[in-house]
Length: 132
Length: 132
Image (cartoon, rainbow over the protein chains, first blue to last red):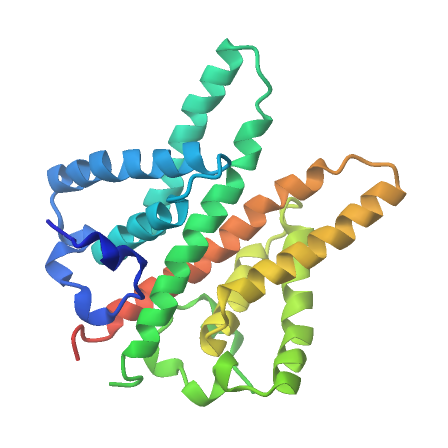
């Protein structure tokens, strides 16, 4: 599935961009796994770059939330990705003898991403004629 | 505006429940202030009860997110409510000489609330015929 061009990431989402056959619930377990293997690195990069003044951070968040929107991805999947990555980071910090407080800071990243996704849905809903 | 009955809070949201004339952007500044005076205590109660095993916590989150959905409330307003309350809590903790880490824990509450709101929008969008 190709959701290009990249510029689309930053534009508001419309309901006309979605194909229910590409929705998460319509995918096979294998297709879902393939998507997770693409989505996880995207989310992990957002986490790793979040406090580093990365110039393309907003575009990365826009891209990730755009894909989540197109896939009609359950929010629980994003929470799951976050917690899985936090577990990995916690293990690494423990090995290095470093404070695990960084994991608490990354909650801000999750808030940012979910808030962006929520705004995508909110704007897309206003596009749709209410009650029809 | 009466969004009763209470049982509605916990039910999935449909797009047919929304009247654009009640949307946040359609309200006067005064009406928005009146709504904030109702929404803030609801959100504050969710915060205060979040780690206390309150039996009606889920219903409170459902109610708050239902109102936010019906109002088409910008997510930024919820973030603003959260930060305002965190400022008040921080001041109080400082006065009492207590650790401010509690404020970091409340980020989980914000994640929970925004995730619930996002799921409301996501489910309501699937109700609407795509592309029409």
